[in-house]
Image (cartoon, rainbow, N blue to C red; front, side, top):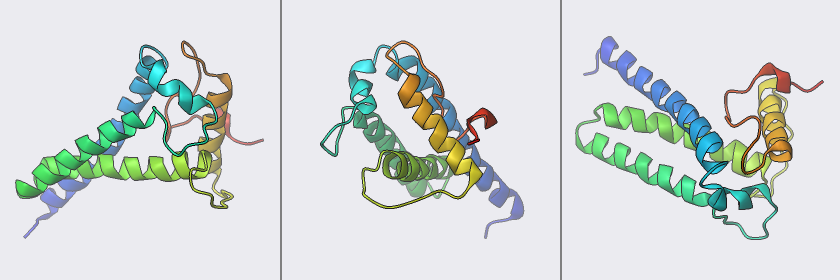
Length: 152
């Protein structure tokens, strides 16, 4: 049976996994994808007819990492690897839903955000695509964005 301390620990590991991914995503996006790995990322900043981009290699990498953490965490009795991996998984699902589906419309759905926060995330990402190049840019994070991106 799980006690309160274990439950709190599991919850904190999920939250840490989520925010760890936002931090790592920011650093990778700013310093690698808009730097030495631009060759893999630049097609993401252009319209492509196909469903896949070279940029998807980053998603594949983090999907494999997440699966390894979840599987080995499960096999080791739902230890910390599992809960940390669950936080990364939740981040990845949120990123996929709002980045790939809502913003980039990889699936053709109609969605008009009502939440001020979601509108802010979308505005920040739109500004990133308008203002960013291989060596410079703005708004490299995804879920943590400043209020300066609020719609007027």
